[in-house]
Amino acid sequence: MENIKIIFADDDIVARKLVLKLLSDLDFNILIAENGNEAWNLFRASGARIVVTDWEMPGLSGIDLCHKIRKNDVDSYTYIILITSRGEKEDTIEGLKAGADDFLVKPLNVGELRARIRTGLRIIKLEDQYKKASTQLLQSEKMASVGQLAAGVAHEINNPTGFVSSNLKSLAEYHKDIHGLIARYRNLSEMIKKKTPQDCGKDVMVEIEDIKAYEKAIDLDYVIKDIDDLMKESGEGLERIKKIVMDLKDFAHPGEETMQEADINVCIESTLNVIWNEIKYKAVVKKEFGVLPELVCYPQQLNQVFMNMLLNSAQAIQNPMGEIVITTDFVPSGIRIRIRDNGCGIEKKNQSRIYDPFFTTKEVGKGTGLGMNVVYNIIKKHKGSIEFWSEPGTGTEFTIVLPVRKME
Image (cartoon, rainbow, N blue to C red; front, side):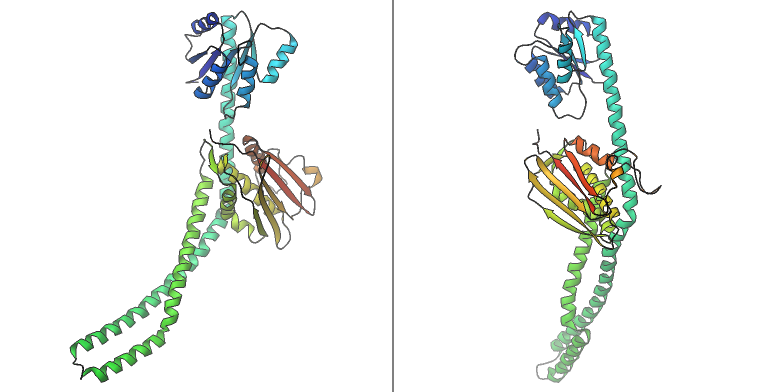
């Protein structure tokens, strides 16, 4: 593992020099801190994956440092080794509760220190492998969903494409008629130019009557109005196609690893736009959106949450036309999203298993059984909560709460 950074924190200068000497031959970047506060600042700035810290330090103790690291919102796991001269079981329990992974007893032993660091590296490697596998699984589930939606998306694109194509045919006919009218106006203009005022009276009147008859034949007033309508309608259709394609592209993209600010209401609208063909024949969607602050999150992952839940709601509706209600509001604990349907509900015997990986009540080949497990993991990744109420034969309501935080 390359570029691993290790922080060693101890207020004893002798211990610091000893550790630098003991670990100087290791292929890692060793960062030295004289106290807990300095170690905390180093940790936030460096992204160190292993922290070796003395328990007793002035200001911020090793235990306090453990608490701060565990409360810090980072994606990668940090392995913490606590150095102590204490040997009581209560001390060990206190250290573990604070978030320590391992312990070293003073005086430090070089072999033991190296062994503990190697253990930490193995844990970190396994965590990184798990994270990579989870990301791949998430993307696989997302692309499987995109594949299932492909026919519906194509239908949604074909509708505006069809009327744009029809409008273009009408516009071509109108262009032909208007071109003929312009030709007649030009003929009249040329005639007037070639004749004296005394000679052109009768001929001009004949041409004018011909033009009036032509305008009536092509229904010029209607043509002018209809051209405006066709252009507006075609523009709206092309915008619809553009939005569907962009939303689908955003949804299918693997996603950024960095968090960003997003409007949850916009995320839900974007998701509905992609899956609309799967819902519109099954349910009326009612949106009761509140005024929300921007949320620091992984927007594409939350889009997948909304997609999985909305598709589940649509699939649960067995009536000719059901109802899905999406409500968002801002509560003290964060942004709350509720998705309610009047579908078949979840049987009591299955309610404790809906977040289990590979659990599904669908027919073989109709689902991966990962949809709600993915939802659960994404919500937990955002430090949020998810709860549900369901009554068989009545419907289901899921409630998600996502804490609001600021960009660092």
